[in-house]
Image (cartoon, rainbow, N blue to C red; front, side):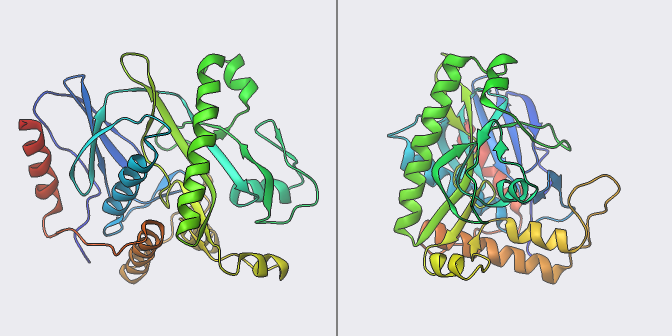
Length: 316
């Protein structure tokens, strides 16, 4: 099994603090910039799996940074440098405590709610007469509160976000506008690669001068769901499952092994053989989403490689 990075416990010059997220570790350097390391941790149902997935961090970082560059004409983002395949560096920001989820199709969580008979999701009505994976007439923004490690993200309506002063109305209007613009561009990029961007989430923060910018990841298989365009309509007509590119295949494997992150449930054992299949799927995701071959970075000593590249960057 290839070397993976699961723990990230570096101590960089002028480091003020470190935040360990579900997948990424974020280092505050001198209260001026953030060094974000994409680990190989795998999170599903808001639970971090016990084993890492080879190359997953590199894949997520390279997709996210590439997509940020491809959307920076529409929406400003936090990114300033990419010193290592697993590392992004950018402006320090105060994150908004909501994730802006946008759904073009009735899939995943929305489909589960729909099957349970609910027609309102995050205060937004879902039309009658839909079946799983049908396209919504217009994309729906269905925000979620951002959970701490080990907690579950929770659905929340626009009205509650503003009423509870989680985000001001003035700022929320900007978040909605940016979310729709990013989703439209993401949809166009996906279409050019024979894919449908089904749903995704965006996170935003404010820079020190009060500018709202896109942060974290964008259009990765961890934050997004993709279908293949070819055969989509035929599969819908035949009531067949869609062929998709996302982390959903991991969720479905966990569900089949009686795990959905609920109290009392135990994460099923992931064999090395299964982990290899997950890594291979992530590489497939990369190559389809990016439209190019994936080049594996040297992982013979991934910790030293990342540390060395970040230190070299910080010297400059």
